[in-house]
Length: 72
Image (tube, rainbow, N blue to C red; front, side, top):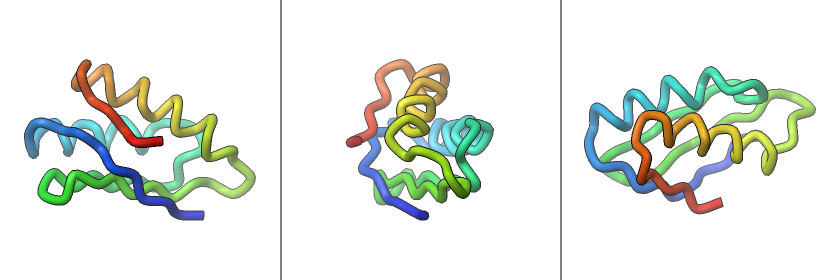
């Protein structure tokens, strides 16, 4: 399953770092963050709970940029 979320990210470099951090979260098959559109596309691994996974993704992204927000 793939979902797109609104995300607030301050720069293109941070977007790349967040993309890498999100991709490492268990339950994420792939993640793409676009600084230009302020969107995050996440493809979830088979059988994962998107709500639980996205909480972990937000935590991982906040390690990159503490004031990051993702519209869950």
